[in-house]
Amino acid sequence: MVSVNRAGPETVILIKPNHSASWRQNLWLLAALAVPSLGAGVAFALLGAWPILPFASIELVALGGALYWVNWKLEYRHVIRFTDESVVIEKGYFIPKRSWHFLREATALRISTETHPWQGPELSVHDQQTETRVGDFLNRDETLELLNVLKQQLSVRTHSGNDTFRA
Image (cartoon, rainbow, N blue to C red):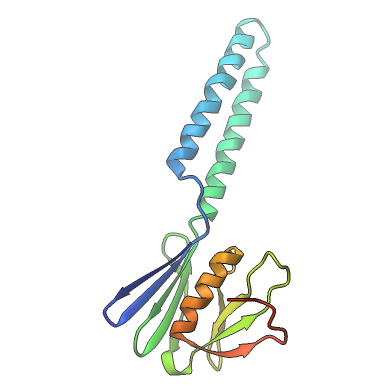
């Protein structure tokens, strides 16, 4: 998902992966699966087949852990701030873990063509010393949308050898 917010002289681009279900929806799914699974486990335990109950519980704990891990991975985001003097890129899950600061006049966009027709081009923001990729988790349409937004803010100084993508 690419969202652009312009507030006076500052432009902020928020880039996040597609998040099909919220954590609350995942908990509802887990509860909906737990009721019949644990119900059957308790019923079999009352009939004497008690080993089914721990396995049903382990299965639900594993599913809950997998849902939590996927939900946590989908909280990753890139925040790009453009001002008149600088470009700041922050990457992290809930708070910025890494950040890059560039001078606006020395910053450019690098575009590398896609390796597969379903992928979008690779986008990197760079200056003379530093480079960082942005939007590497986006699908093709969202990457092309990000490319159009970044072209409005930055000059494109580096293309890969083959311009096969269409923006």
